Length: 105
Image (cartoon, helix red, strand yellow):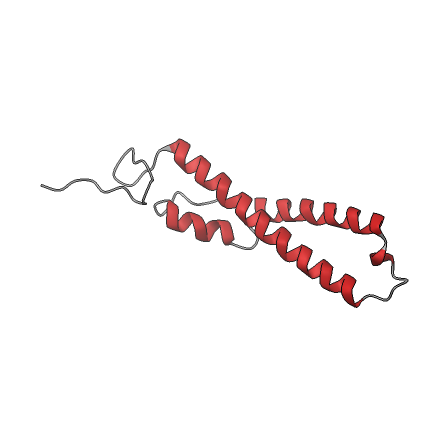
């Protein structure tokens, strides 16, 4: 007598290898948002390093420019994460979803 084991811890299963579609959608959304956060944090750190070594009269030291560049970095991070450019979301989804369900739609 064997029991069906869910493909991932906490993943409600609807069949042998298919998780609940609601769970898959939530997992995908969370993975992409995490990738966006990861990319945004990396861009922020890179921008801070560039500001630290820039001369005092550099446009990157201007507060208005900093705010605008931070906003652009956030938008860029969201766009790159939406394309799964870095593969972070895919790596997370490989852990959460069965093979074959973690492909970009």
